[in-house]
Length: 59
Ligand SMILES: [Zn+2]
Image 1 (tube, rainbow, N blue to C red):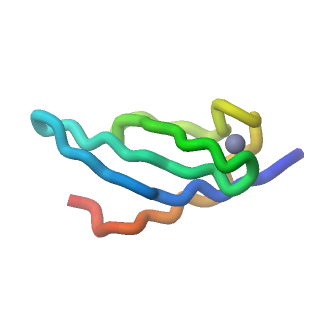
Image 2 (image 1 turned 90 degrees about the vertical axis):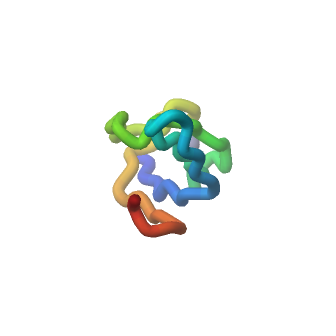
């Protein structure tokens, strides 16, 4: 199975909701998701996410 690492590229706070842009290291697509949403696979290439690397400290 293909594995990937998601790296945080951007973070926006909208009305108390934190939206995070992740970059998949396997397919290089950007995935935008609310911080609260959990995920285990890349929506674009289907690779299993084995690690999430945040560029900023969690608020
Ligand atoms: Zn991917």
